[in-house]
Length: 263
Image (cartoon, rainbow, N blue to C red; front, side):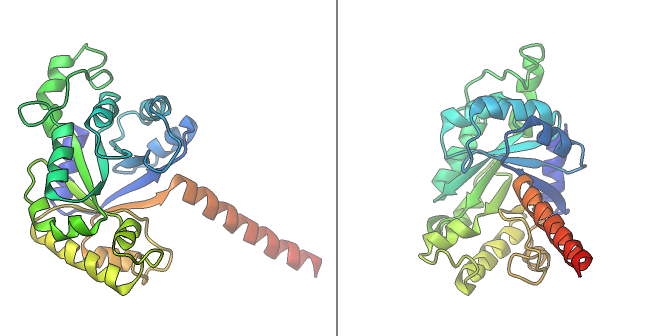
């Protein structure tokens, strides 16, 4: 299965390109599906995407491994998202190893977890129910966000949680937890991320950047530093970011030609 192969690729430390999605238009999802990315992540924590819109996006994305950033560590909500066919979830605001264990349990069927059985789309609406249930625990992707001081302090224990597939660093919320917002590029934040990244590498835990790389390759969140820190799973862009940057670029081109034409 694609998700099992994707998790293996992450564990081998191979570069893996994904993309953030925050727009609810299914035609955007169809276009992204055919780009050739390894994965996409739909943000439902900070967007207006509801469950029905989410299901439409998942249908449009087809067999593209799709992660959903859920609003919180809620087992009932996580169950519904997975039953729609998401490949896995990204759980924000983890504060401890116990939080991480709860997130894993919400994604796994007993005896490994507490997820209730009702896999609608993943089982082809019951046509392949037994086949799905036989592999679901192995194929579901569980990602937690390290974006609080508590998670950083308990990170050694977090790394020992069974069933955890990757950790995503949320630099902005981490800076807020450290009392440094909006300076998420403060050297103290970067140093904290460096320590977390070093521990993740030593434990062979895949590390995902919560931010797409800055245009300045040498910035703390540019390509050069992200790869140096050990982020092998990177969202290369976001749908809204591409629209805004593309529009700005074309506007600049227009203004330059218009100015030249008028001179």
